[in-house]
Length: 431
Image (spheres, rainbow, N blue to C red):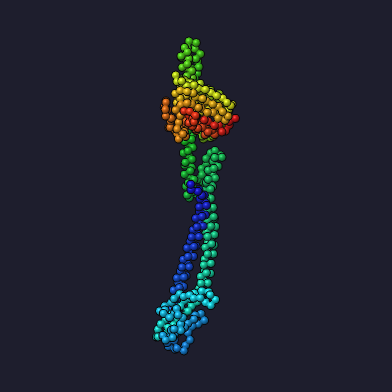
């Protein structure tokens, strides 16, 4: 995974590397040019000196050659053997030479040779002074590289602070919107530059988003009113009809099913509207709900799904658990889990078990594959097997509700027998 660095850090490092690279390149170029030019100038000067020395000796053999800075020798063709052995066969030109002095130290020098008029001239020039100057130049250039690198770092620090100050201010104002709960125009606070353009774009986006949220809020309010009213009529009508003395047992059972379906639809609408509001403003707290009581009501509402299947549904309360959440939220979550267990179990038992801080729904159905356990909570994914109908939204809604209230919902295959175990762990608000 690539490490994330702040923009300011990247700017500072870029300036420091740029200053170091530029100054180091300049230092290397300076050393190269100095060595190249110095070598050419020294060679040309020595060759000129030795040529002049040969000319002067040819014109006046008694005239001395050499000076305080250079050593010069002049031989004839007959006396060349008196020169150093390594010099005797050298042609006209300038050579880089080295030898060892009496103290055992290596001495570097340049030797200029000229052959003319039967004379052979040698001029030796000690370049140790140039070596010392070169070392001093290298030291100065290294110091300059370090100095310019530090200067570039300082400029990078100052410039990054100045350049990114408007961006930091923009981020601060955006964070303040979360505290105040309302968005204010950003563009008036910034200059007409790139940051100001970004602020203007954010203002336009904020305007569109605010309008969309208002439409969503109005839609939720209208849906809540329009759907609750007919459901309330259905619920009250079924209640009145159940009080009629001339109802048959079959009609009374059907009215009870209508009443349960109406109640489930009401709870689902309340949970979805609550989820829509809470995802914008946070979950609603304060209402305490008994988990076992809601589980019992859900089991009774789901019994018509059994029809003639040889399936037993059992509620086991091993511990008393209460959660700080509306009953409609827990009812919607348990209705999906228990309803799925009943729907996919052809025979056997569905056990709803309330433990400390959790509730488990254990069935003897066909079970699930371990790799499919998490995928079932995705939108549009539904289980395979008996009665595998529906749009695959139930478990996705359950996951969203549980995440909203800090619960952990999961499904896993049973290890002791065929079937699956659906579990909700109440990590927060459980006791």
